[in-house]
Length: 378
Image (cartoon, rainbow, N blue to C red; front, side, top):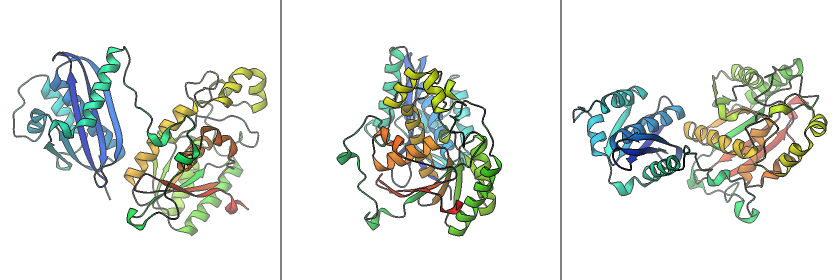
């Protein structure tokens, strides 16, 4: 069943024309929860251009979540709402191509437009101003990590989830992630770093056997309704093996890929310790540190894994989804579900082709149901 989203968009210009930016949020149509945000500083432009840019960005964000979704656009720009609804003509040459682009994002019959007062469009307005502030500072807007994805160590008594086995019934059916690590590659038994910046190895013979065993076990459970996977070769091969057994298609999500380990790709831990001892020590000591030559830290991973999680929940609310990924993203999702500190990732063991399970509730809480299950491989 296709999702239903609400897109709230806005744009502004400090000078009209002047330095301009836009903001947009995508909300779940049933819960009202924000599932995506977009903002950008667009340079010198008018208010109306910025508003149209915000509309386009919001529609594209909704389409990325679900290309079959229906969308209710809500804006405080009477001009954009009336023009996109077809009640007012679009005479300005700067507006015409932008309106035409907006109409191509999703089929017209799946998008409606509603005017709302400015005070009900505060989130999009805030993002537009953040984008303009960023532009004034000479940089582009970057999303702020969500509360669930905070990587600075929180007090465990406040970070622990409130839901779980005792979650009240009125929260409805939770969304369940069955988290499957890919099968072995030739690098796995040698315990070599294998991220998204290396050779992208395929499954070994043992890895293919593990994928088949996982497929048998998941088919026997009979509860998986969708399959989402990292686009890397080893996860594609694992996911496609299971999906074929379940009679499902695989949807790929880039946010589920492994960390880029930079110059450490293909090396063992001992080799990294010998060649890059200072960088390794920093990496082990801080979630914000990056492997030598990499642009990614565990902080970066936490944000993109959290975004991927939210997109999957929005698309498959109340369903059981097989999520095929790698060690670091799976550990990150488990850590976030528990509200555990970043260094807890070093205290988890995830074997090749192991299974974890996390349930997500409508109030934003989560419950870890299974960790590192390898019974299907025995």
